[in-house]
Image 1 (cartoon, protein in one colour):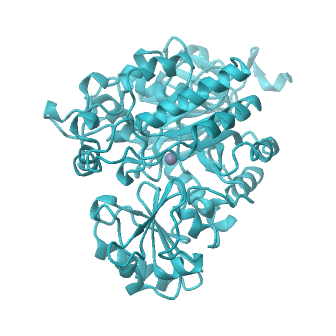
Image 2 (tube, protein in one colour):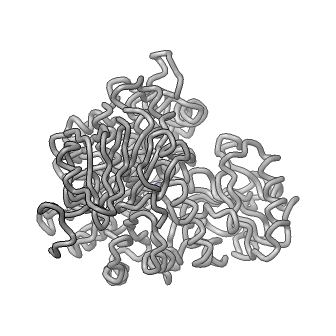
Length: 579
Ligand SMILES: [Zn+2]
């Protein structure tokens, strides 16, 4: 170590933060007053007196004024690169009527005469009958270009006649396995709503988003991420560029690996991305080789892929979640899985053998069970290893499967934003699942007690806005913000603690992404990912957690977000850098 780098034997820090209430989320969940940062890593964490020893000429000192600081948040399932770039795709999440959708589509098409396809996302299932929206409404506003609008959950598409015609989808087209082409009951012609895997029939003939359009989506997410304190995210829908099979309609994102890779190489990422590659049920084990080589190519510290993504089922709102007992509103069906059980076992065994992490979408209890059966098979074949396979969503889970999940060391990736009895619960979940089954949904505390590691996530843009502080609050309260009626709590026994929820968005997320040595806690040697909050979460009423502002977000020691109020009031000794 050169001598000008040190002061009295201590390394000279680039920045120090002092006078804070820093919840480090280390093993002992200890608190610190101050941190010193050098070259993007913490070089000291502890008391003010320890940290000031690292101050030398040129060290920037920031007085936290007693504010709480935490590790940067980790969102373990967020579709960062998917379709949320206003210049390429219409965002409809904030609109709430058929007329508003049609107006927006019309305006968007006028604004973007050069887009070959009108893409959009965010229409609400509960505004339409169970068969979904119809093509005639879209045809009335656009008939000369294909239109494809994703539902709010990302599992269904609303298309116009031109899109159907380009894809050759007619009344004679049979719905593929795991998908539904909704048809008009009288004429038998496709009505305009296409579910799950059937979307590939259309998506695969339409041009995908360009690399630049996807970069715009990632940029949008990063701007928001800084504001809400996210410094690492897992994007679970990386698409192989040449994949043309069953992609659950996500083929439009086929340039996302290139977009991330270029942004990482060019220093354009202000957060760390881990991803998993979507698998195609029509090519069970054949695809493993190209997934392995694609993952091996991405070695930048800010963008790597940890394994594969597998949809075992769909979603409750489409009757596509795979249940052990029939739907309440369709007593003739339990939904169906997107994979044959045997093919799923083969896939898991092959992926596990190649040391790929398996990121599993499972919503219904039959899907969860099928996933566990296949994971068990993989473990028998390949023996136990540090695999860190995960199941996300975990809506309906049979009690007897919880200990199995724990025994297989499967990580749970819940979206605590959904663990409430809100409009969605009333209009869809309680009706489709039956009240009792819906009320027993999302058994988080039961999983935690069984020893299952839980790494929380938003499923952005399914959930917008998706600040981790809101997720933390809802994981604790399990009721709508402001709700005071105890009957409105979704399974009171499943409520989580503040400590557990913070761990779910920090250190557990780091572990889920093989990053526990790099981030997830504030400890000497780790990357300096840290956020500063307006209030100490341990000192305010739980229902104020979501309203707490993030004052500052540091990513690898750099300020990627600062609230205008912070620094003026709290006296940053020198200006905050902007590199
Ligand atoms: Zn998702």
